[in-house]
Length: 315
Image (cartoon, rainbow, N blue to C red; front, side, top):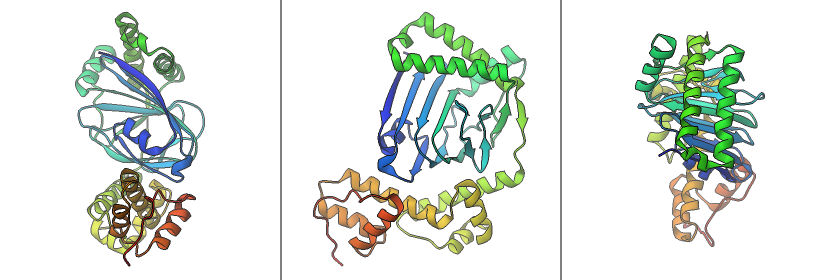
């Protein structure tokens, strides 16, 4: 049964959950973050439209059973994938099960279309006359303007339907016609799009920062030195620094600290009525006292942390 909807979010946590955890978001002002997410699940295609009001970094983990195409939906700031800009007019066909970082530098509007690899293969052969299998590392395409405009128009039409009259998505005739038009437009864009070059150097930087995520996930409660992280992933500290600058827009040290604060914030938001647990959580992440934690949190986010009432430290 097709389904659709649209929601407005005033915090990154709810927004991330609604994205089905495809993106692990790291925002710079959690209380100031707001976004709108619109979705439409059609019989074959799954559509997303996102409007975000501020900059953020996200670690994307895509499922291996769906082929994803993402693209900016409005003129403005580009999406940045693995340090490579994806401007308005371009689209990325992601690799199956791909992991990479998506970054924005301000307000952004982007969309996605996903479908099974088998469906993409069948439509590619039927409409374009050849396979459109995703590359393992993804590829960036620049469709002819008329093809891109048609796809964006249909994608926006589906989004407006989901926002203003989601019941229409249950109408089989309307959905069938819209989906057939969108499949044709998507396959045409993928088949006629000019491949945009991604340098091996950029792919290597992206892969290095993905390996950084693995190391950090193994040590969630520690602040590791840059040299130790570099040794763990088999790269020099200088290479790690430059890769993080290109991909994340910040140093590995700052990213690690913001990531740790996000983990603490998520846990604190879950147990706001349990003061003792709040103190234990903060201590577990290596803070030696409440003033140290509040100071670092305020410096990073410009707000008071969501500590439970009367939280205290043993030290």
